[in-house]
Image (cartoon, rainbow, N blue to C red; front, side, top):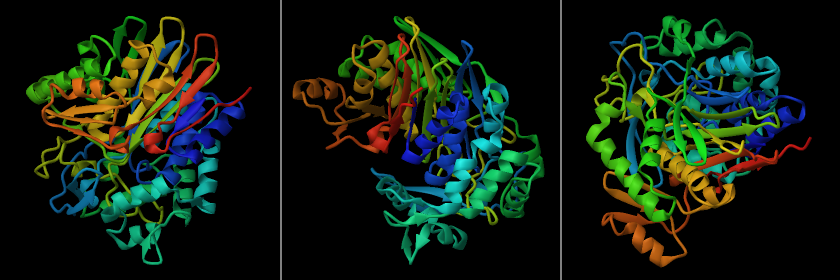
Amino acid sequence: MIAAGHPLTAQAGADVLRDGGNAVDAAIAAVAMACVCEPVLCSPGGGGFAMIRHGGSVLLIDSFPHTPRRRSPTPDVEAVHAEFGTARQEFRIGPGTSATPGLFAGLAGMADRFGTAPLPPLVSAAVDAARNGITVTPFQHHLFDVVGAIVTATDSARRLFVLDGALMPVGATFRAPGLADALEILARDGLAASEVGAAVVAQQAGRGHLTDDDLVNYRAIEREPLEVELPECRVLLNPLPAAGGVLVEHTLRALDGASPVDLANALGTTSSALQRASDELFAPTTQTIRQRGTTHVSVLDGDGTACAITTSNGEGNGEVVGGFDFMLNNVLGEDDVNPSGHRWPLDARLSSMMCPTIIEGNDGAVTALGSGGSSRIRSAISQVVARMCLGEGTLHDAVIAPRLHAEGGHLDVEPMDDSATLDSVVRNFPDHRVWPTPHMFFGGVHCARLDADGRLDGIGDPRRDGVAIVVDG
């Protein structure tokens, strides 16, 4: 079973499962494909986190971007504006906003530790798709429009994302032959010792902070997951320095049940704690980034191997790397980590809201899940876990149920059929907004599940165009 944010992403992983690969192999193939068909959300120039269950044990692989080892005196940084659904936001792009990418270091580590195949054949479907082209979906066109200020910021970006003077329309064929070359090279040689790495350093020279030293010294880091025991299950979350797992844990421990009122109150408690005590919740050398360009893949196989992997490229730094048709991240341009332009710590792993999660049921069931959605990731994960572990609904019910998010004393709520329940939910939140329809603002929780009886189940969250595929036999 695989669940992901695009049909081709899910299909790439499903094909690997059908050919005998395990869940980790399938996740690698899916993430490589996401670089092609979800380029706003996933890129070789970004990074992520993978929660892997293999042989009964669970491990987190951190391949998130790492801050540069030194600061450039002349970083090229530009302020732009974009519409992210609820507000017009200012953020920064340019070579000076890029931290060291880690995505392929993480994928290589996953393959070495837990996979059954080397990287080159696992990325081959993505290579073919990048060369031959993929059809732009309505959701992907919407994402291009949201970050239009980025994908039209430079000549190199416009050559990739603009057709006949306008952003790639729905139904157009998006081709990225340079990305195909990059995927082949990175799968074979890695970043530091390759021509892709040389192109990254060339882009950064005199305009960004990254050098050969940053690429050579980058390491994917293995971490022990954060564990939360609930009455019917054990929940494994992304540990510090990532903040998402700590916040989900805080919400789960504040819950008395899984009703909408319980969830609203617990989410409000976590939001208040985050405002009051952020220095105590997070490692002091990091700041928490709320990635707006994020996607997720969940995979489970019949042997119980599971992989939940969340990836991000920030929003991209606006400039294509050499002739390789991808952008480096702009995580140093995030207001959350870099409000004054120079606060980030040297040579440090950045924190993140991303929280790939695995649930082990007391009955033997295993669920892999995760979400994109910036600061709403913690709310989305908390609600789905609570409804699965403390409620009585199905996996489908847990994902589809109306979602809430509390932040800074404000509550956002999706529409509810029961007006009395809605009134109870918002009673403690005078400052609230009820959305007219379910919305991608509230994240996209893609889930794969192996039930205690061996049955595979899953769902791709429709809020973010999710797709789930069951692979028979």
